[in-house]
Length: 156
Image (cartoon, rainbow, N blue to C red; front, side):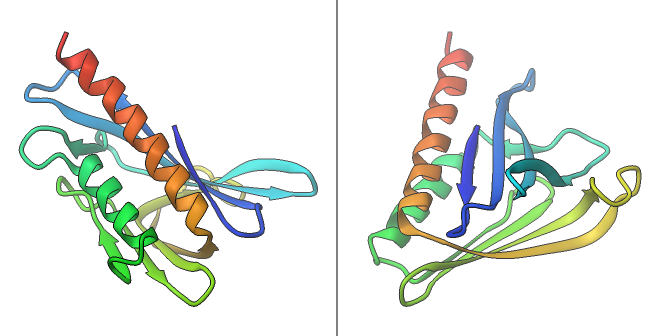
């Protein structure tokens, strides 16, 4: 599970990878947003889809490409980056370097607002937050480790 938190340490994006039974291997995932309020952290948004959610793990492995781009961004080799999963484009992640932070926009094609109406799915929900370079590096490292574990399991 990889976590990206904002500068205020009160909004968290959780990207959780999982092994699937697909051949060739696709990487399953869940994406959620948690909010901390009054010392309690609760899930607020969850990417919703009727089918499983997947990253390509075979033709164009998406997680290594995402991690590489995030590292280039934090090394100031690129100034912005946009990522959408190849499979269904269920979400869009945009990160742009500003003067002292990175502006992160997350758009979900279909999301459930869990604290409002958890049984309804809303189209095109967006979230914007400021994140630090260290948080992006940590997020990328967590994703890379989780991805490596899954690839090792497939190769057994």
